[in-house]
Structure formats: C-alpha cells, structure tokens
Image (cartoon, rainbow, N blue to C red; front, side, top):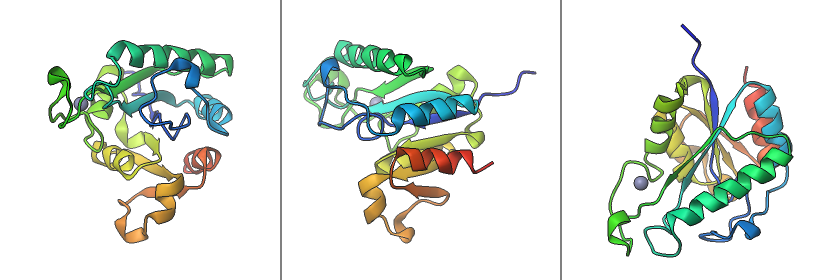
Length: 187
Ligand SMILES: [Zn+2]
C-alpha cells in the first residue's frame, strides 16, 4: 500500500499574504516576507502544500465564491512563478451571522472547526499525525490541533499567547521563515 502523504496546511490571510480584511481582489495579493522561499523548502522536504482559509466575506455578502476562486487562481500563479505548487485550496464560505441565506449557518468547516483539514485529509490521503498547520490566529492552531496535526502559531497572536493559553504541541514563530525552520528541524 502506498504511504500516506504528509502536508503542511496553510492559513491564507495574514500567513501567506498580507491581510487587508476580507480581501477579494486578485490585484491586491501581496505575498508576505519569506513565504515563497519557505514554501519551496517545505515542498523540497516532501510536504504537500494545502491552503485552508475562512472566507466569511461570502456569507456576509462582501464577495462571491467566484471571487474566492479568482483569488486562488492568482495566488497559485504567483507562487508557481516562484517554483511553488499549491496542491489545493479549501475554504469555508459560511458564517453564523451572515446576510446571504445559503451561507448563513453554523458549519463544521469554519476554523477553529477542523472540517477543512479533515476533508483535505480524506480527499488527498494525508496522514494528519505527520502533518503541520501554520497560521497567525489561535483559531488556526485550534483547527490544526483538533484535526491531529502539529501546529505553528505566527506573529502577533503568538506574542500575546501565554504558554497556558496555547494548545499543546504548538510552536510559536516570529515569521514564516522561522515556522519553516521549526517544521524542518522537527525530524
Ligand atoms: Zn463552513
């Protein structure tokens, strides 16, 4: 039987690209420092790269699912030029207080729920215990932990998080490059 793949699940806004608040214009995409180089290293180490992102702007009527696809096509293109292949993008369009009826509901995919990661794991045969999540929010690392991954918390939330409030097996990193170091040195 073929070995299961291992993945690094990546939050999008504030982790891979600058978080401008419900971004939906492909032209506004700005990769954060160290992301392209870091993703190349993870890829070379054999990790499958999968984006998992909450896009409540769909439920709130700020933009449509087509806009999410356009963002992801553009991001894929930008990263591909940097020699990085994103295996897949998974997003949650829901929000319990949304204004667009078909998306305004509780769901099991909006982080901190682990639904996006679990779906990716089923669809792409990923061994979650060998996988990681990198995100800049506590809800990201909670989703990763619940799914059974190890996690790295980036940036501002990491500064505020005390050891006591962090889920177990969560590393903290100042930036993307450091998050990648933590993952690559863990073996
Ligand atoms: Zn959802």
